[in-house]
Length: 373
Image (tube, rainbow, N blue to C red; front, side):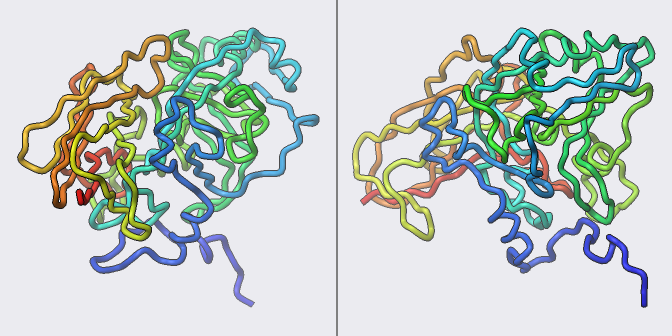
C-alpha cells in the first residue's frame, strides 16, 4: 500500500483562473468563519457574536482549570502561569479594532483561493489582560533574546505542513509600553468566547489579526528571527503570481479603511440598498494601524466632488475605530456611494487595489449600490 502523507490532503496555495467561481472548499471556509454584518457598525464596541472570526484549524477543546501559559527560551526563570496567576498581575483593558489580513481578498482579480472575505472581516472589542512586558519581566529576559514566539493550541495542516499555529514579534516592540500588547483573558468584560481564544489569547493593537494568537499556551524567547510557516511562508505580500522563490514582505500593520453602514433597506440577494429621496444620514467607522484617521470622504457617484464627513476624535482609545458621519441628498435613480479614509500619516485607501498573491491588505475603497425610489 502506498504511504500516505499530509500532502495528499493539503495542496499548495493557488490563484483561481479566469472564470472560476467560488468553490465548495471556499464556501466551507466561509461557513466556518464569519464577518461583521455591516449594520453592526452602529456599535462602538462589537458584541462578541458579531465580531469577525477566522479559525485556521479547529477551535480546540480547552479547560481553564488545567490551563497554563508557559514562558521559556532565552529567559532567566522559566514560568508556568495559570489563570489565577495571570489575574494577579495588574489588569489592563484596551479597546482594539481587529481586522483580518485577508479582508477584501474575494474582490481581487485573479482571486487568491482562500477564505473569501469581501469587506466584513473586522470588529472592535474591549480586551482585558496583562501587558506582555509584565509577564516577560517576571521571567527575566536574557540579553541575547531578539523575538518572542507565541504558540496557540490549534493544530492542523496548511500547504502540506503539519503545525501548531505560531507567530512571533520583535522583542523590543512586544515589550514596549506604548505597543499595548496584551495577554488577554476577557473580551467585553467576560471570559473569552471559545472562538475568540478561550481561555487566553494575544492582542497586538494596530496589527492584522494573524498576529493575535488565540488559545495561547506558550511564549518562547529566541535569539534569532523565527522562521515558522505562519511567519515566513504565510502572511507575506508577494506581488508575483508565479515566482515560488519570492520571499515577499511581511504583513504587519493594518492599512487605513473606512466602512459605511449601508443606508436604507436591502434587497435580499443583491444587497442593493433602497432609500427615499431627500436627506439621508450616512455613517460608519474608520481605522488605521498607522495612526488616527484624519479624514473620511464620501462620494455619491464617480466623478462628483466628495462629501467631507465629520470624524470623531480617537480620544482615549487610540487603537479603536473612529465614528464618521455625513448627510447625502438622495435623488431618484441608481447611485454608487464610495467611502475613503486617510490617516494622519497621509496613507489613503486606493481607488483600485494593487494585486498580491495572498490577497492581503486589500483596503480598496468600499462601494455601496443604492437605488433611490
